[in-house]
Length: 278
Image (cartoon, rainbow, N blue to C red; front, side, top):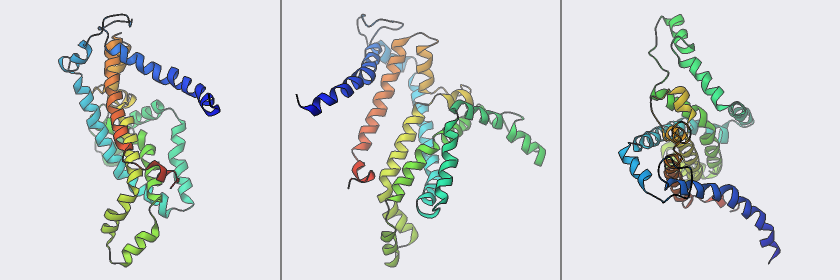
């Protein structure tokens, strides 16, 4: 056996035991009869049929819908900030980076409960509007927009920093040459900036979509179960309902959907170019 192969055995064993093993167990449980805690039962497709009969597809549709909205908003918000960090801010880009990174050191739940204080009735937002303008805001907490706000707030860095990397790969000389040849700012943006920055855009969209798809705290803390997302159903199946096969089935669907999306996008992203190998 070659030395390189022997050196890779511990890493391969770790991946098999710590990563592939649990996934295979989840896959096995998804075919077990409901409320079964053993893999020794006869496999069945009853759990997958219940996606339609028990309307579990609704939570998946809501998760995809809210994730797409969050990705679109994050792209619109992050693009100008990323452009400034990559091309305009200079040394101040480090300050902006610190402002965005420091909140990540605080628990996500704590940060979301901070938004609860802002959005609740007679909270910071409502109280400020009453004090300054005498206007009472409608209830903002436990609504779908509150969930979207939470997704945008929590996953902003995961969209911003890939965009910074993507925009930093766009040569300024190429844009200057296009401008000298008479191209408008819109043409430069559409035909030069976006195509060259597309790897960073795709990675940012993929990260934020997959993270939003599996989010749990945002819908619980800010949404108050107004909308049931797929992660809520998975948690309930594994905990309160004590129905591991049902939770495993929902997890398998989420994993297959997310994994297919990742492999599809990675076939269109030049990672060697992004990390500087070419």
